[in-house]
Length: 127
Image (cartoon, rainbow, N blue to C red):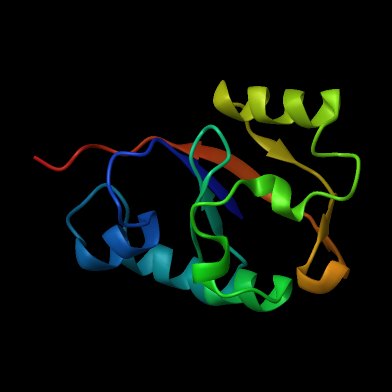
């Protein structure tokens, strides 16, 4: 699962859900997803905000290595500068749900195939 969120706080959706059960996201549901899915969170422009252990293990990175970088670091050669990749991010920025098989490159150049469900999460600002 990939989460595209408006950048309104420095904590991830998963962290906020766990810390605030009364918040918009149910902590139990988020904890269950965190255990069984590879999750990464981006800004609408593609900047990596957070990723869980499942994602990091699958891709061979630590969170410190990817946080703040652009998603294109996982794109195969030639894709990151393509029209298809630009349209991919435009679609996500409009809030469109995307799903399918996406080829990605893990640390060290290894290939990784994901079947993500990518959606925009609109979060509320803390009062």
